[in-house]
View (cartoon, helix red, strand yellow):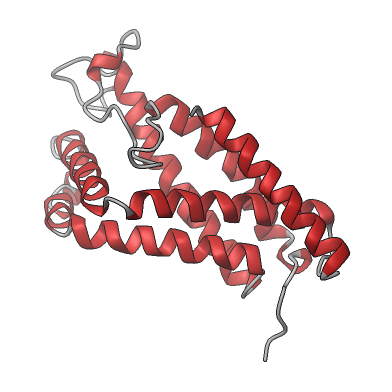
Length: 210
């Protein structure tokens, strides 16, 4: 299955959920907002579930990310951050489990419209985190061997072999995405993320506060 096929199927599920919300439950303030909540919510639940099958695989990916960050940060004026990455790497499995659970719970909160302001902020921050992660990895393709990310004057033509992390692990082993595709996906998700943030009062809520 390709990413396009997956997104189309998720969009179809989101349309069904939206129709139920609008015509059966009558729980909506904006049809566009309701669709985006269901689309992003189903996407996050699915992404978290396929990674939950193999949390060790996600942990391994996180270790590779942290190793890359250490290599590129350590010799620069960002070097004060470098000691943080080996520590994070040693707790990669716990970080992996937390991220997987958080992603699933956040997806469910979007679908249900629970705590809309918190959900909007959490979704934005998580998408920004993913965007920085995948964007950094993709851009290392322009960094030749021996140079660091922040030596912009040494950047050369794009070469996928320069990247140490070639699969973001966004969907576990279900779909393999190259960093560029993952980065573009996360950039796309920034649009609904900011929409949720600025229009969170329009988000549907399936249940009242009690």
